[in-house]
Image (cartoon, rainbow, N blue to C red; front, side, top):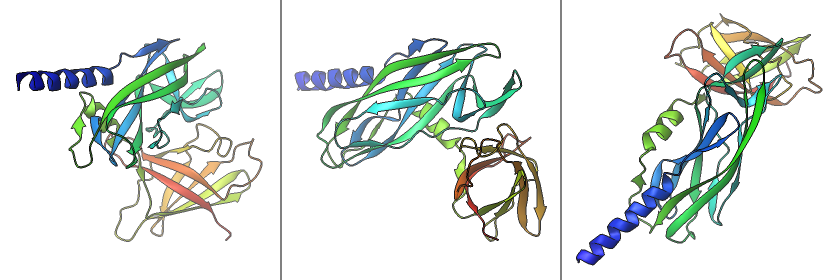
Length: 279
């Protein structure tokens, strides 16, 4: 019995140590993989995150970096039966240097993704590998970085309870702070000269966003970078204008639009699918 108990403790310690891999430094930032759970049952899911921590005074970039920069990314090497969603990016801020506007993050940023295990995945240690790439910049210079990262989770038999990792709170806090998908709202646009006219209709009984908004468009070369637009309430809808990018070649059928209530730390952040209107 004592030997069995000791073996179980050793296995648990090894699994924990494997999850808590040290950050990898490259250029002017470090990177690491965080996992919500250190052990997940077959056919289960959990959150995995890429954490980027730039040096003081340096910043990294959003999924649409703007007029300069490069989005942070990771190329996964996954075992069979394991799938991961694309990275979720939190709300960025606007940087301006040398007359160019870019979108990104000051300080550390945690980009989450959903990991799903198929029913055929065998119980035991499962290694997640990925090559992360990013660009860290100041107002004067930029230095690219990349890192080969690993994390290990223990796959449990079906029906076993998942076990949280020591960094679960970091991952969950980052994920809960992400913009909310505005799935029940209606968002449409028309082009009027060099402006997009945006109309947003809330679900019945839902309060409109405020008129003081920051706007971000993830589709590159659609809206002029770094412009938040002008917004107002009109007949129960929210209407606004955003400048068309000079590089836009063809009107898209839709584009992703992130609106964030400004001036209030508890303000809403909603992501819309803004659809081209024929009217």
